[in-house]
Length: 171
Picture 1 (cartoon, one colour):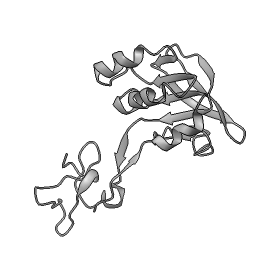
Picture 2: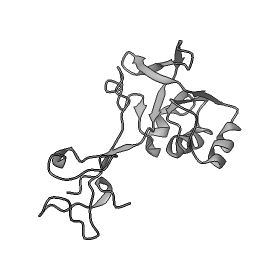
Picture 3: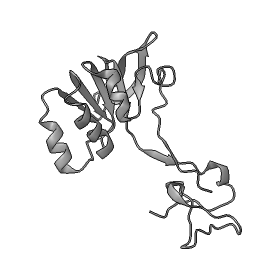
Picture 4: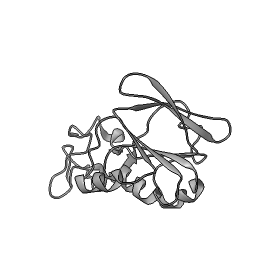
């Protein structure tokens, strides 16, 4: 089993509808779609803040939305906090993505519970990954992160099933 990992999704209305029409997951080639526009980056870890850094010189404004306090490396947090075109929304959650044919905005629930509409042309979702272990979850032992537990020789708890790569607890 070497099924890797998949990006976590927000699972909010509009996410699937606006795939590649305003909703992206941080690939550098997607930056060209939002050049000169207002964007949102969802997440508070290193990946999200690196996207903010990469987008900074290309976009008009960036809204960084994190469901908790930013948890990226402190040096990275300090660096992006200096950006004049960055608006940080901590302890906020995205509840829907809106638009007609293309994404035109997001609605987020702020820390105080109020809904806030933010007009953006692009959303970059960077909220982590999950292991693709569901096909063997009934056969092998998984850890609390749903990674397949393996031994040094890639053996699993089920004889004859071996696993390797990101789907495992190897790293």
